[in-house]
Length: 121
Image 1 (cartoon, one colour):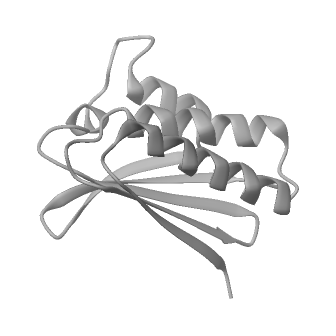
Image 2 (cartoon, one colour):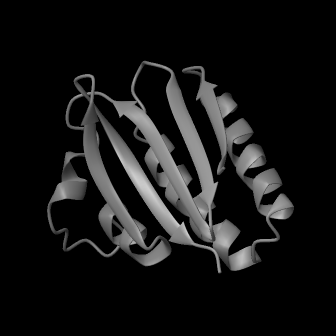
C-alpha cells in the first residue's frame, strides 16, 4: 500500500514553509537524493506562489519509486498557462518541464489541481 501525506495550508504565506518541511522530511525518510528534493521543492514553490485566497492542499503519494504530488485548488486561470507552450525561459511551465517527469492540470469539483510526477529511483 502506498504512503500518502495530505496537508492543507491556510491562506497566509508563512504557512508555505510547512509544506517544504514536510516534503523535506519525506525525502529523508525515502532516502531521496538532494537533487530530487530540490526539484520537488522548486515545483512546489512555483505552484504555491499562485495560490489564491483559499487554503491550499498538498498531497504527496509515494508508490514504487515514484513521487506523485497534487496541489490545489487553484481558482480561475491561476495555472492556465501550464496548458500552453510558453516561450519564457523562466515561466512556471518551463520550470516544471525541467524539474519533474510529468505534470498536468486536472479539474476537481470545479477547480484546477496540478499533478506532478517524479521518479525517485
